[in-house]
Amino acid sequence: MKEDQFITSLPINLPLIPGEEIKTKAKGLLKYLGPAFIVSVAYMDPGNFGTNISGGSQFGYNLLWVILWSNLMAIFVQILSAKVGIATGVSLPVHCGNVFSRGVNWFLWTIATLAAMATDLAEFLGGVLGFYLLFNIPLVWSAILTGFITYFICHMQKYGQQIVERIITTMVAVISISYIWEMFMSSPEWGQVAYHVAVPMLTSDSLLVAVGMLGATVMPHVIYLHSHLVQNRRTNDESDCVHHLKMAKIDVFVAMNMAFIVNAAMVIVSAAIFKGNGLTVDSIEAAYMTLQPLMGNMAAGAFGLALLASGLSSSTVGTMAGEVILNGFVGFDIPISIRRLITMLPGMAIILAGINPMSALVTSQVVLSFALPGAIIPLLLISNKKEIMGRFKNGTMTNILGWIIICMILTLNAVLLYLIFSGQA
Image (cartoon, rainbow, N blue to C red; front, side, top):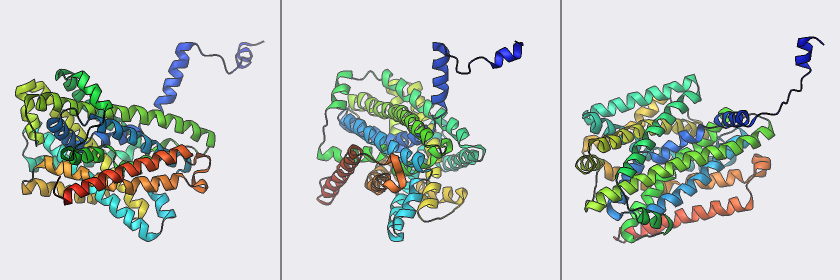
């Protein structure tokens, strides 16, 4: 037998040695990682800085359980959103446009647009404050620079989604490393941390910040966006879609738990450094300035760097989500440059009016909490339709968990409204 004939006659599916098998599985997983990391930026955006610093400096470790519960909700809804995109090849807003009446779609679009504006406000302010604190660039010029860099990152989409995924994943790494390092440097009371992660504690004084933390963690606009992002890796083969969904769940689990660690670190650092020294910090600038004498220039620099990376990356994700929302619900097609200019205006107005950015950040996140049901309810209804989802239709337990989450959010919002109008919050 000739040599080439012998080679071609060898069995094709040779067993892999353990090292090669691990490498092959790792490559298979890495192929699907990315969409959830883009989404995760929204879960550690400047709005989180505002609410988590407020929560930690005012109430110590007491609200850490809110971060845990919010993260579990986030994992649930992002997996559900990814499932819609993988099962159907169509984004959630487009499904809403096809399923619901025009009046309902205009209502949902209005809620989603208000949520996007509140999100963009927080993200834009974060980038501006990051430049201002790190490099002492005047706020107006910082605003222009933030807008320019956001334009640039969004422009990179023309070269493929994975380019943007790499840019944003790098920024997520910067945020994570900066805050995890600060957390260990702050020497928190780990026993108190563990206790308050596990045991809920809420008062009328802390409810506003708790609802803001919920709104900052579970983000309406990326619920819509995730169903669009996963389609980049989707095929029309049903068995591939089953495998894709398994990989998407791992993607979500890794990315969301990274976001959980970062958010918990923000509260822990604020509780240990600010609350531990009897300081109530009511602005991001004050947080930065206070960290310098208490922990040194490196800690303050890490804070500023994390804030800058958070603002720039989340602004990009907000713009991407805005495009999906506009095109899906009502078929609008507004150029990114005009949309970015519109979304920058509220942030510019706050800067020019001299309003405390921290207060604006917390308020914007409360608005997002009120907008959440407007995204989660359509997601549950669409993902439970057999004619749309086929074999991927929700199971009974998924529906029960989904409606429990919605009831919890609505209850928190109702209690907050009562306290506001009764003058107790």
